[in-house]
Image (cartoon, rainbow, N blue to C red; front, side, top):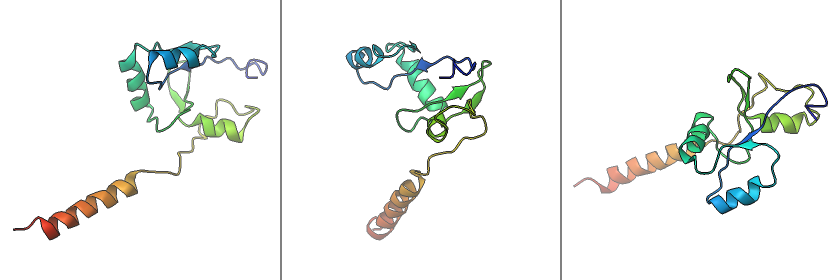
Length: 119
């Protein structure tokens, strides 16, 4: 679709598969380039760099490597015709956050230590 609109792009698949066999089966259906499964350090580094919280995740980079959108999957869902591609500045972070859960665990731990940890 983007090619038909005259918008050049490249897709690079970064797998979260657990085994080479899973990677081969899934990637075998893909028409684009991929980071090799054996490049675990690169794959994990990219996931950290772009704060990947779930799959699939779609990140858009400029030809120079600048981040344009780290949540382009949501943009694509909102704009399935890709009329606003590359959706720069339309980034919308997922509403779900682990921070409140983490805070509750820390508070519970502190209370438990205060109540039961004193001697």
